[in-house]
Image 1 (cartoon, one colour):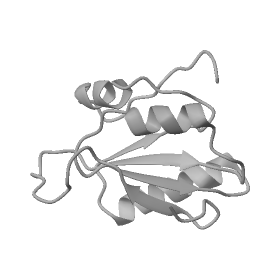
Image 2 (cartoon, one colour; image 1 turned 90 degrees about the vertical axis):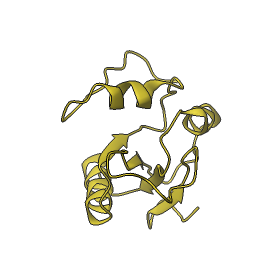
Image 3 (cartoon, rainbow, N blue to C red; image 1 turned 60 degrees about the vertical axis):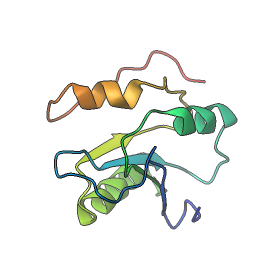
Image 4 (cartoon, helix red, strand yellow; image 1 turned 30 degrees about the vertical axis):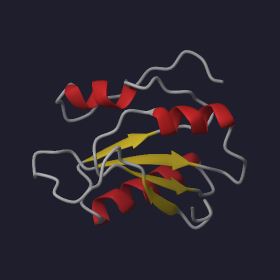
Length: 117
């Protein structure tokens, strides 16, 4: 994967992206990073996350978390992603977390976290 300082993308969908219908979500998993290693627990949970075909991972860094998050959104808009799922590298995500949020079929969903790993 490309270094986080430059931003990098990786297709990590559960199936090939070709042949997606217009009704299928095109999801970008966005991870703001700040020059640190990615914890193993986060990496494992992000790879085990149930995802629709064509899901991609994009890591970005900046002086502030807001700058990195803005970079992720700009990347998603420039590439016609239908959904952005922001993930923090100090969290662990249940396998169904993304699919449950996609099933809610509302314009925005915000997660509430009580603890970090």
